Amino acid sequence: MIQGFSHIGIGVSDLDRSIRFYTEVFGFAQLYRLDFENNEVATTMEQEGAFRSAMLLRDDVRIELLQWVDVPATGSGERKPMTDLGFTHLSFRVDDLDELTERILAAGGAVVEETRTVLGDPADPSSTRLIYLTDPDGTRIELMQNVPDLSGFTAEQVAAMTAAATS
Image 1: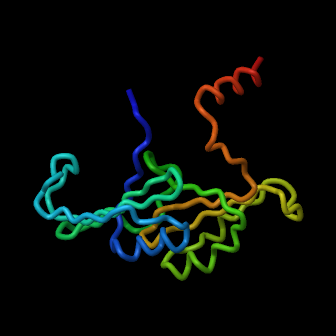
Image 2 (image 1 turned 30 degrees about the vertical axis):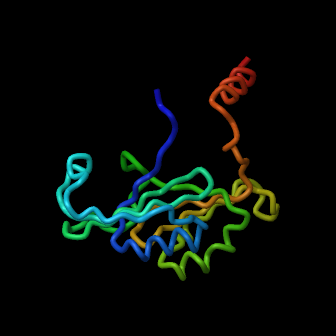
């Protein structure tokens, strides 16, 4: 049986910079930081070599940042297309999309202005607003304003709501 969700792992090129980004922009706190220097988890990682890890926490979300020390990182550092298979993005509900822009840029991220979307009347401040940004290594992050908080629902409650809506 599954006991619960553990964390999301994100490969980074500079652990300290990425810790600053996620703590200063999104309010994560660092739970711990570990250096793996002796292939302690090489079997699990499917890669020998030293790496650094930091586990960050905000509410019930945990992100593990991983920086390889003596193994070259791969990837372009650009945000990957939404059509790529696998992990596509993180997403956060926010009070105000624009309020975070300065912190994102100051912490080494980028705002992808052309992804800005308003669902509904742009003049209505209660319309849903969406935009993507990237962390310093190109990981895509979605900001969502004026969307409901679904975090308190259990699977049973969702099933009951779905059944009621379709009957």
